[in-house]
Image 1 (cartoon, rainbow, N blue to C red):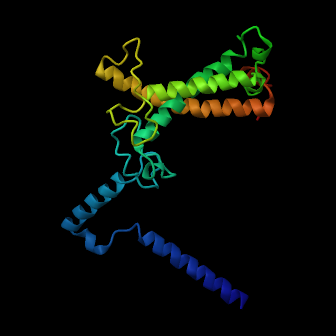
Image 2: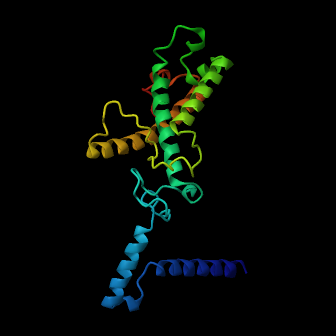
Image 3: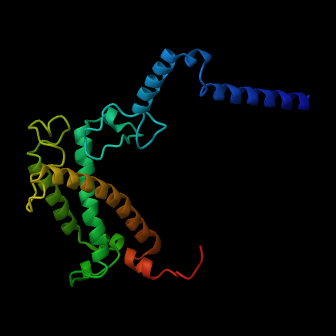
Length: 228
């Protein structure tokens, strides 16, 4: 019985593999010229509906390539639940904050204010050395800037009612966006560097938690002669 059961399982497995392979092979009907052209166009349409960044997933309808840096990445389906402009605004703001935070995490290991509350070079520890009153002032300042920069329109349905583009706060003191070609280049650079900074700062802060050192101290204390 054991031999018979094993043989049956092997037969089922082979049949399943053949069926799966058959799904990727052309039917004899499609060898006709007209049918072959139709199949090609259908395949092209299917390929266009797939995500550029995650080829085995479908491209979300809201990510149509009109936004800078759009590569169809939304495996969690956020664009089906929230306004795409509101999501892009959040992405840009978090990216900008993390670019500043990454720089600050590195700089504070070398340069810091001559006060006890600002003397710790490890960012994860320095945060908890700031007095509670100081943290509340920072949070209040962030909230005031956030509300005034959006004219007190904080929801996804009202934030862009005046036609404002996501992330555009009118801040361009060096006139980098005066040239449309240069503006498109800088917009793409900002979104890419912002995404990298979000990942980079996450790695830095977790490194601080694990090692108890800042990024620079961690790198300079590694034993590079050791083989991994």
